[in-house]
Structures are given as structure tokens and as C-alpha cells.
Length: 107
Ligand SMILES: [Zn+2]
Image (cartoon, rainbow, N blue to C red; front, side, top):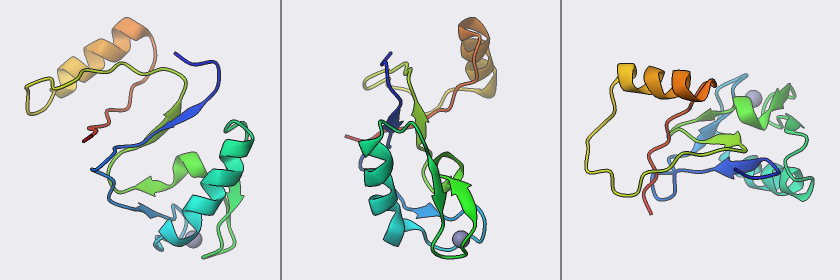
């Protein structure tokens, strides 16, 4: 758990990011937008997408390989499994009382 929001990226699995409004490749402007949001401890994730001019949230962009913003993470290092089942994912979310996003990170 952390006091402030952080970005959970998939490490070497990073596969790019697309605008959630128009679908354009957002990677060209995403880094700068992330740096500005980071300077404010990710307290405001709203940006005007240069590709289409729409107001969107960095949290709503389409991360090609899953990534997410949050203050809590449950991590398993080298879990030695291919995948968790939807039932297992639901069970973990139910135990924690909050929705979970699964991010496979390659270090
Ligand atoms: Zn766009």
C-alpha cells in the first residue's frame, strides 16, 4: 500500500498505449503527460489528448498490455503458473472487497 497513487506498469511486457477516445497511438505524448501527472503525485489524471482534442483520463487510456494506477498491489514473484482463472480472480477481489486488475509484469 502506498499513501499516494502510483502507476503499475508491466515492465518489459509494455506494448504501448492508445487513445481511449480515437484509438490513435498515444505513446508520442503519453510520456510527457505522465511526467506532468507524476509531478502532482498522480492526483489529477485528466489530460487533453493531442490526437483528437478530447478530455480523457490517463487511467482510461488503452494500455495494450494491462497497466493501472492505484495505491495497493498484491504481488507474486515468479508464481510458476501460466494464468489465474476468472474464478480465482473473482475470489481474490471478493476477499479484498475491491475490484482488481491483473498485470503480468516482466522484469
Ligand atoms: Zn485521441
